[in-house]
Image (tube, rainbow, N blue to C red; front, side):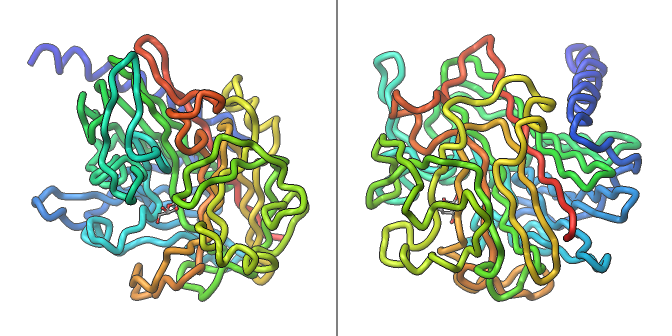
Length: 387
Ligand code: GAL
């Protein structure tokens, strides 16, 4: 009892420090209180909430504590018309259903794939769920994307922190992990996602944000007419089960070369008959995570830019991570989402900032190992404007 009382002020101070750090994009956090609404209940009867962040331009980001998930994001086009640009569901039951392909969620303990769900640390082999036969995908049968996080909205700011304790042995991973993810909406139309985690034993940690974007509006038929630019010369080729071979190769001469802006649909057909079924590739944006926090991330410039020529809505993505998974929604197959909209094949795409897939088994890749006494930190900014 005493322990809880003693820790509450400490927790609040820590959370305010997180927000202060997050305010170092180009805009200040919007000075509006997060409004909280009911978002249904999970199958086991736990109430979920929806946190509505709003800035002074009228941009809104809606988040839920289930999966620390971005549910909707209402962004203006060149005429000031707003549209919700991310896929999702109307309440928590959709997120618990099989139709949820990690829409908008926080993915962990390890995003993307771990070969055969197996890795060895300090001489001991760990076997994880092989939920993407024969590999482990996005943290397993019930990863962080499918868990209820504890929410802490920040009074008078358009910001909310979600906190999760992932116990020793969770989904087969060693060690207990304490993770937080803070979403902050700024008055410069930036949605900042900041992650922190600590562990009490060495364990792999690789978190990502899994929004599916269609800048013409969620439910639009296709994302293939969007233009994409990815500031990466290299990518990690993968085998038939989407596990990297260990090589890091130039994008030159491949359909993966987005160094100059290109329409997504222009060359995707060349990938139809590959195991990726389209774009589902890790770009080696940099050889190691970028040090130096928010300022270094913004100064480095975007890692990718996504633009919808029709509406002019443009997303600039900034990140300190070594990897960027570009996934063109090849497994979308007509699920019904928010407002009855149907999410067709390739009707949205994901730009997931993270470590490289299967890095825990690939010593030449940047490490995803978190050890006691160190802190995992990740900083990603989604900045919107219309052209
Ligand atoms: C992506 C991954 C895809 C697919 C998708 C979820 O992050 O790259 O291969 O698993 O998530 O359906």
